[in-house]
Length: 120
Image: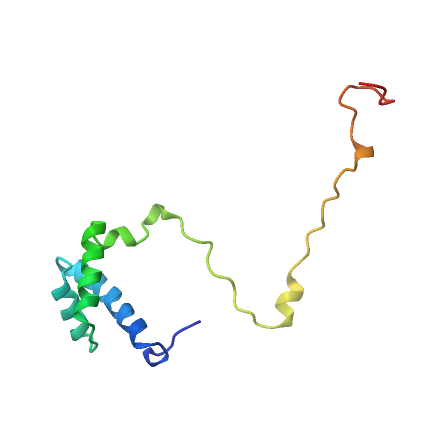
């Protein structure tokens, strides 16, 4: 679900979003405390509960900084997102790979080298 406006989410979701973004900004500028998270949230025109700011400050300080939550260059990452569906022509361009046929029991080579199968 793509969010295009903060009015589309609940108040709790909005506070979590604002607190997480404020934590990133506050950690980049100085020590990430509940007060700095609240100040960044207020400066952005939003408000968060003091308990939400304290929770995010505690998580960031316990983890050893906000950098622990950000993927570094060696983190790999996904393979990119799936392409948006544009129409029927795009689906026609996809080629189906032929399925490999599995060898049946009659096609296998006798592991003992005998042609008859005899008794083992």
